[in-house]
Image (tube, rainbow, N blue to C red):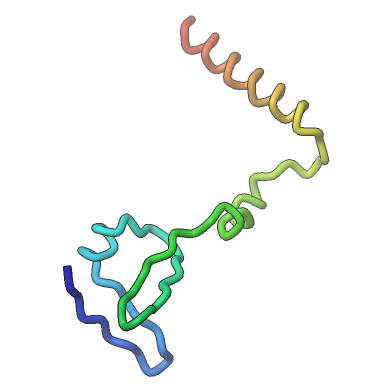
Length: 83
């Protein structure tokens, strides 16, 4: 698969939709160029961790309490779905 990419005056590139779909790119990525070949780097957990900040609880709780709360929520959802 070969694609020609254009670089804007600001140094930005746009990947054609067919290429993004083929590489399963949905968000921000890094591309490493080596020997005139591009390697797409998928974002790591650390790269995307901040995007969930608005969903985080304002209260600081332990992981044990967070797991219990999530388990209780799922159990409640299942119980109400079956009634």
